[in-house]
Image 1 (cartoon, rainbow, N blue to C red):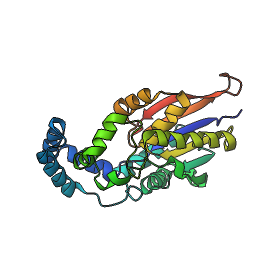
Image 2 (image 1 turned 120 degrees about the horizontal axis):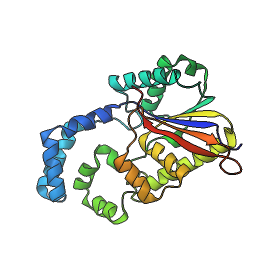
Image 3 (image 1 turned 90 degrees about the vertical axis):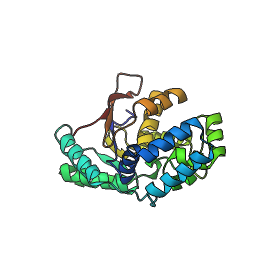
Image 4 (image 1 turned 30 degrees about the vertical axis):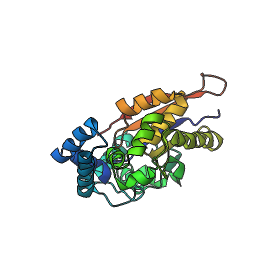
Amino acid sequence: MKWPASVTLVRHGQSTYNALRAMKARDPLYRQFRRAFSADSNSAGTKALALEVRRKYALRISDYKTPLTDEGKKQAYLTGLSLSGQMQPPDIIFCSPYWRTLSTLAWMRVGWKQLRGVRLVIEDRIREQEHGLALLYNDWRIFQALHPEQKELRDLQGPYWYQYPQGESVSQVRDRTRDVLGMLIRECAGLHVKLITHHLTILSLRANLERLSPEAFMRLDEEEKPLNCGVTRYACDPNLGKDGKLVLQCYNQRLF
């Protein structure tokens, strides 16, 4: 059998960026900016509001170093605890090198002590999408309000093909996760595999395994975004085709 016996994907727990975004969404100032952006993203008033929001909510750390919140640590611990009662430990764990994914694994190990003896591979191809210059703004609407040519380009190309300056497009993230699947077939046939990763990487792996179109990919991102510590699992069915196939068993399951 060329496929892994199973592949379990876990998104990282709540990060400080996730918490900041939720706080911002409740702020009347940000709501005012959103209304102005919808009415005229290129007006002087919209730009002034964008600068004010940016000053108030600047995270001032790289995406790589963004940590978990206390809530995120709790989510990871409870997810590990729950999974420990549902399944055997994996044969191998692949983890994104970002701080929030490494911390998620560390707290999952607190709840699921058997994970401590499992081989760990740090795999940078399952990192989050690189947002390049837009990272300095921590919000794509603020970035577009202050760089209107980028909004024009994204509107022209569409969100799947648009590439952030000095960053990646969604399609490029999908390309590198396709390489990861090839690696799993070559090196992990018959093994139970766990990946601790990010929202867009999980969607990219789904899109590659299920042959989703760009339109279907973006609908999934819009309507069914992976949750913090959401669990997605594929299992190999050897009866499907000559060498079997990974079949979706659950998607985005929250265990706490």
